[in-house]
Image (cartoon, rainbow, N blue to C red; front, top):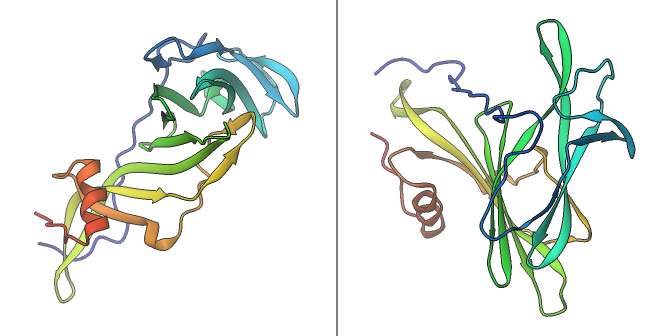
Length: 212
């Protein structure tokens, strides 16, 4: 036991793609239509992923065309400048890890190349053929200070989880980013002894988490 730590220690890893020349995407049944490494800003091509550049990215992105519940959708992936040996290269800010297609819904799993955050989008197709984002999930690993007595805190490893079930209509393109806005009651910390599914289920049922 010790006094409260002022700033929680966050363990951050950088999940770099194994090859700059293409985005590493795992799919079940040939869901990838096109995996583009071209980089754009304001709809103008400015280079390619992994390419050395003098261009200063303010809102750069690459587009991967994938099949989501049977429909071709463009996923816009933010791109930024990365410094390597005093030179600037164009690199993905996120990596699409997996796309899981089912009859009426698709789950897109992706992760940040800049932090420990992992993300999940669930998309649903209704009877009219319209596609909606129906679930947004973010998970990041860190340390949570829990008060165990008055003015006495202990630090525990935890997952910080945010989940929103707001419905958002998707037209032709999805922009993945870290700018997901959650209500305060949509975010919580959970001990790492629980799986993410157990954390969410316990929260929904009002079951108290045990920190140890």
